[in-house]
Length: 542
Image 1 (cartoon, one colour):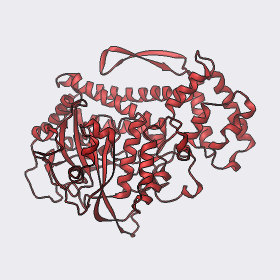
Image 2 (image 1 turned 90 degrees about the vertical axis):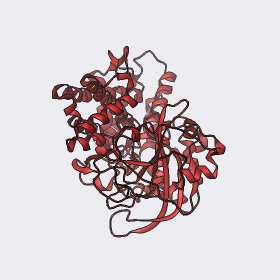
Image 3 (image 1 turned 60 degrees about the vertical axis):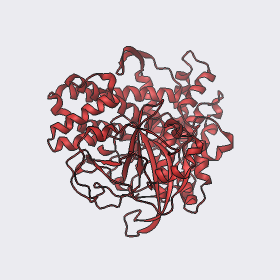
């Protein structure tokens, strides 16, 4: 008997009709999924794993370190009754309809039922081609796999909804990639990440059958998702479809506001990369803000248009939700309530952004309002509303942070212990700046004036300075996965040194704590990393 066992669920494959074509080659598929086998790897090696994810799905340390675990989660073997599959979906890429896309380098091993954490899907990323790989090979390289593994786990510990990463394994095989699409392809180390989530269904999963006018499959998909992950809404009906769409809007809104809170830029917010359950999904050319810049995008493909830049993520989320609304319109046949939900998203985003900014600054907003929680109709959520003065404080701060290169993460942590002595303010914040030559007298006056307004608002509430500082430090992380740190971990891993990978994994489990032994990971981006490949801009190449 196998040492590793799961209670298999396989509801997705049991619910939907499978692709009848068994041969694995790129093609148009008119079903929800295709059965597909992971490619056997030459010499797999486990180089990182997440203890908390393993525990979540019922695995202990001994099992994680077993040969069976390595063979299973590198794609070399399957447990009894596992029927791996790849899902078919479409999407808008950079604002343009791309038609069929699908799991091009992801293979779902199985859906399982856990003892304490509900249903989960185990998915291998980089395990070989599927019918949706198009002209690609379905594999992944070490550098992108390290980034996926570290970032998904970092996001979880930041308290942000995300897919998880169970394991990171080398395959022992080489994968040829042209990192910047400039004709300089080279062989790189192949790797596989096992991702875990309650659902890998995306906005694009509904868009594709809608585009094909396949109302039967569209209805079946929506009903499946509601029953699987939104069961609290009740049995599917036009009214429940609307309630579901509103909740998808609410979850997406909260997700993006959380990204803004910690300085995360997804980099490729195509509709096929938007999770229907409101999780961060598909860690490709993402990046973390070093110096605060609303116009920054980490994606080389987006360098000119900057569609997915940091400051526009909320607007793009709403645009993507509009595309989802278009897809599900045939189930409702009434545009007005869908438009109302989209309008509410904009209002909710502004309100949640204001509350987020107030939390980052330790300010108690002046007005209060109550709203029903979508998942608990009998519960009221009291939400604060910002006054004009408070909103101006927030907007003015963004202008100030944009005017000179200021490290966002360090700035908010330093602000939490701003000295009472005003003469010390600028020297206290000096460590946040990347170029002291930018700090003009005019800038100093502007910043000092803002700090005056801020400190008055901060101290006008009922909380002590200690309470305020504690709240701010629970909102503003000290440690994030800075781009240059991830790149350093990659370069060492490519030399078979995984020490920094493991150190970063450890420190990022407690991102809000001081952790003095890891202080170096909280420092500003070094000058050499500002324009270095992998530290500033990345491509979609995997």
